[in-house]
Amino acid sequence: KAAGEAFFAELAADTDVQKSESGLHYKVLDAGSDDKPSMADSVLVHYKGTLIDGTQFDSSYDRGEPATFPLNGVVAGFGEGLTKVGAGGKVILYIPSDLGYGNSPRPGGAIKPGDTLIFECELIEVNPGS
Picture 1 (cartoon, rainbow, N blue to C red):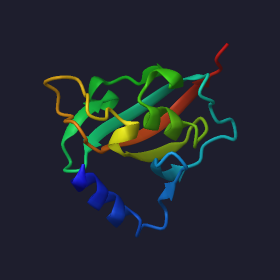
Picture 2 (cartoon, rainbow, N blue to C red):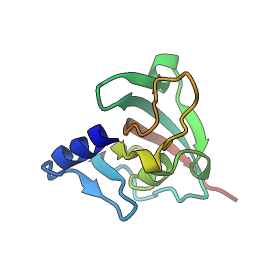
Picture 3 (cartoon, rainbow, N blue to C red):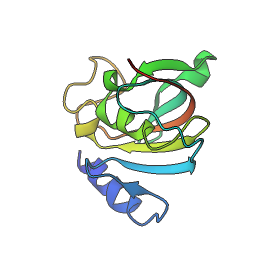
Picture 4 (cartoon, one colour):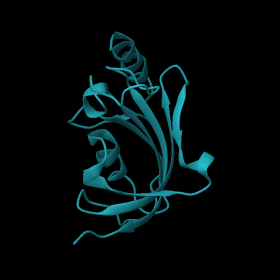
C-alpha cells in the first residue's frame, strides 16, 4: 500500500490526471460522445489492467474481444472511472486499493492485498440500465 501512496504522490505532478472525491485518479485521453454511462448502465469496454510495476493481470485485448460489465458490478474505481467518458472515449484509471480489491483480492492471482490498479479503458458502447 505504501508503494501505491508513493505512486499517487508522483501522479499528482501530472496535470492531465484528475482526482475524484472518492480518491479515484484518472486521465481522459478521449472524452468520447456526450452520452456518458451512469452506474445503472452496463458497458461494452476494451481494457488492460496492470499493477504499478507494470505486471499485467487482465486484458480483453489479449482475449480478442471486448467485455460487457454492469458498472455497479465491478470494483468501485472501475465503475466510477467509466462514467467519466462517453461512448468512443478512452481513459486511464489509477485505482487506489480501497476502490479496487482492497485487502481481499482473488487468492492466487497477480493482485495482492493493498495493490493499486491501473486500467487503460476504451468505452465502446453504453447500454442503458433498466
